[in-house]
Every structure is written in C-alpha cells, then in structure tokens.
Image 1 (cartoon, rainbow, N blue to C red):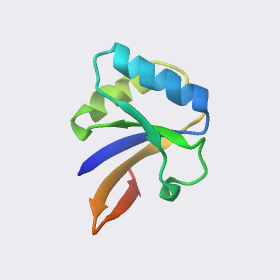
Image 2 (cartoon, rainbow, N blue to C red):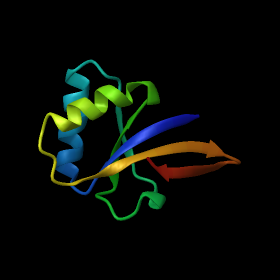
Image 3 (cartoon, rainbow, N blue to C red):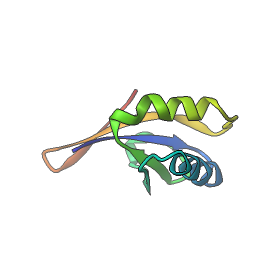
Length: 85
C-alpha cells in the first residue's frame, strides 16, 4: 500500500485543509502522523498519489503557515517506510 500525507504543525490547519480537499471532491482521511515525519501536531491528511497535483494546487490557493511537507508512506515488511517528497 502506498499513499501520501500532507503534514502540518497545526491541528486546526490540518483539519481545515482536509475539509478544503473534501469540498473539492477529493477522498481524504485524517490519520495519525508517523513518528518518522518529525515533530508535528500529530495528525496529517492522507490521500492517494494520483491526487498530488490537485492537492498541491489547493495548498497553494491558501496561506498555510504550518505546512511541513508531503511524505510518502509505503508498507514494507510490516513497517511503514516514510520519505519526504
């Protein structure tokens, strides 16, 4: 399984961004942020890789002060392999 996380330092911005994506017809989930993504608010927005261009467009349409970055997450050998994009 392979997906992407949008990681923020602010819980309110994370939830706002998730709602923005949903209101634009994207399927997203709010999930716990893996420890490998560093110091964050603890939750992130999960979405599928084929939506990355649209997610980036929507991210750029607003001023998000706490955005940390995008991370790929892949399950390998029963462990999450997390990498920054």
